[in-house]
Amino acid sequence: MIRFYFNGSPNPTKVALLLEETGLPYEPIAVDTRTGAQFAPEFLAINPNGKVPAITDGDTVVFDSNAILLYLAEKSGQFLPPAGDAKARGELLSWLMFVATGIGPFFGQAVHFKHFAPEPVPYAHERYQYEADRHLKVVEGHLAGRDWMVGNAYSIVDMALWGWIRMLPFVLGEGAFDRYPNVKRLCDAVSARPAAGRAVALKDRFTFKAQMDDEARKVMFGHLKKAG
Image (cartoon, rainbow, N blue to C red; front, side, top):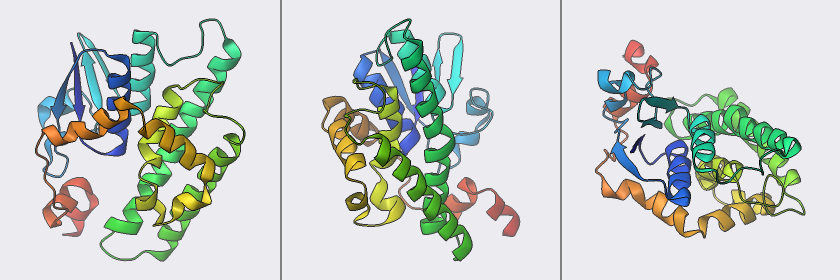
């Protein structure tokens, strides 16, 4: 059985969505990153980078959320372009990596400097807010006149994007969805799926530390240990 190491943050949630969509049997294993569970030796043996999500599938280990999405989609034979459609495959891989190298990192840094930096850093805040907005404008334009990111079908690219865009007000502020109606339409379409509700609710079956206190900050943002 697949063992799924997760918490309720965007990257694990999009993997939870795919697991729920495919119906693949899995065991969820909570990793409380605010208490430092991601740095336990047994977890580092699975993901040396000390981040969630990760999965084990028998002897196979996969970490990084978009790598997991691709692995699970191929394993299940679902939410991918038809076999032999090289054009659609290229499009899927391109947008999947766009989310992996653009949306995820820039949204993550935008959130950090907006909400969690111990002191204001105006340049960093403006830089990452700008890049989050710029990437969203690319997606907004791509979605004009189409329902899904790749071809005419719901795919792992939509799931990868949904993991982050459902948090858009937290990233860019209240009212952010008003600026990207096509993005909102996609987010709403995915969120309405029963599997999405189950994916979001998965974290509620476990107890995670709720407070982002000084100890949690030091655990999650390692450079603060040196500063302290």
